[in-house]
View (cartoon, rainbow, N blue to C red):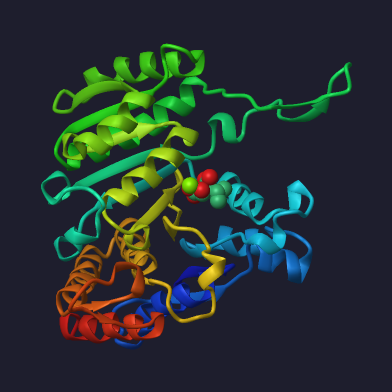
Length: 362
Ligand code: IPM
Ligand code: MG
């Protein structure tokens, strides 16, 4: 039976950018390079509009039957004030939990053609290539109790719980140690062990695992220092492993080192090999439907999908090469545009990548 890939375009620019990655998939299927079936599903605000829920049960069913999922983005001002459980972001959190997608890989690398796009000095970021391994189904995002309650004196109080057990820490640390082993062998675990007990345990558990990975050099860093070091000297890092919330924040920070969040992919992986792939950026409702969004992060997310869920290393390498080639040829979407380059739209960028890819994949 052919493997299934589920496409979840979502909201805002989601549909236009996923459509570009879909062109790449259709090309591979047409060429006989990939034997997969494509399915489509609803998530986020557009799912709320059609079904009343941000993660309809139909989508969960399709997702469970798929080998991999390619998602666009969710959310937008239209749904900001609806009931909390129905907000688009809840759909995203729910699919992560439903599928057990506990390991979130967020690379930050700089395409040399885009060195000028960074707000940092060229020498600080040139050659930057780091990987953030973010825990994705635990921590303060999912801890109970949580809520907003009324106190005796009539004022309200919001509360969340930061909780990590040893099993959760070990499984994410294992992914991080293994990722570091395959890269440059340097792992930095980021916590706030001086203040938060949950991350005191985090540090202790990860430190104990070090002996199983003698080739990996492990370092621990407090999150405030890590934020500072990422801006000061980002190339000191190879792999960073951290909690759900710290990873959320640091990955946005790291993405900007590369000049454009519009370039960065991500993978969220489960134990059973299932993966969901999505660009690191959001739904950008202000530019939705204008054919100006950058589809490259989504196309690069597809490349991660080919690598991690379909084990098509060569097709993945070539797709990344095509993105680099297109940038080298001077084509840019507006978010990464600079003097002397040719600014094109979302669709044209998708076509340019497919055209180049077709010369590499024969
Ligand atoms: C991300 C996003 C999500 C998160 C939101 C949309 C729920 O910021 O994937 O980083 O906080 O995890
Ligand atoms: Mg985020």
